[in-house]
Length: 471
Image 1 (cartoon, one colour):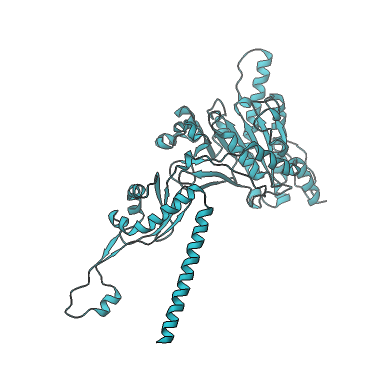
Image 2 (cartoon, helix red, strand yellow):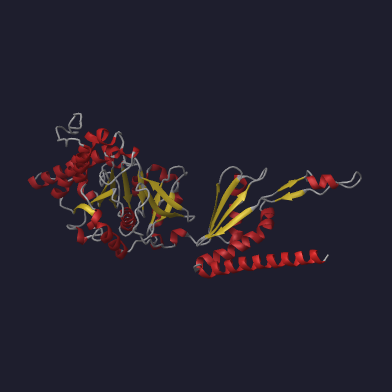
């Protein structure tokens, strides 16, 4: 008995120590959390404690009339039948800044559909702005409850300066449930970005450039139709990370577009012999064959239709028409050789970006818009069927930095809170990575020399139709 008592005391002591350590760790975690996360941690405790009762009231349980194994073994012949068991799904709760994430199991007659029907009851009980329910594998669902609206909560992004593992991964921000939203740009020929002035377009592009700048496998060229020089506009802090930049001068823009099309032609003519593939994305971008990002801001400046009979107007009309033809070449033929074109404009209607360019771009984002017609031009006619997600509803100042896009694999449209990148952070990253800036044409020359291939000329509209061989 004395030994038994000693063991019991030791067991209680160990249990007390474990409980104390657990409580201490929880207290430290709580103290170090920000204010929003602390509220969510308290919310998570309430969710766990009240779950059994709430699940029964919301109809998320089942009655099992079959006795359990223990009841069957201990039942006596003349005793009454055991009472039916009420089964409630088990849950796991995790708090974060915006609310809680709940992983729950399913039961017979309590599946994904039943959880989705009960979502509004859960939102009220958990004091959440909205609740979503999505499948999380066989027999599991994930319930996301947000207490504060992520779309109206401004966020900041501080670039780390580390090269991304995947340069084709564009981390846009978070959706209305605070879930990260990422888009793959691999095999994407073009992207359109629309929105009223001050809606958040430039900040979104700043983040994109700052995240990719530390990689030598990415080179960027910029066009800005609302300034004459880089230091005058939104890309003043990004200029050192661009191998070329052009303002609103149509002659300079035309020359730079020609230069890019020449790069595309040269890459097309040598890709199979140099890389061994027909599509660069099969091997991925590299320092000597970088992903070339063509940023065209205020794109309507370069495609505008000039009407008039005087010589200067005719000359400008010919320039913008050729600009459209050259950019069409980049978008339609540049995907497989690693050229990505991003067109940015307040409206992406046909008079701003020609439809033969716009409609080839599979990825489209729209920040706030004033008219349904502008929203349709940016996102397609299907946005009419999703009025709650329309960018027309984003005109409130609280939605500056919020964009709408159609996500592959998701029904309808997704609203995304894009983070703000300060000018100081952008300047810091660009200054630290400016040494990585290189002209892709010179990179191609170096690659041809390194692999022993001849440097092709331009014998036709699509480059020479010759076989390149090692000397």
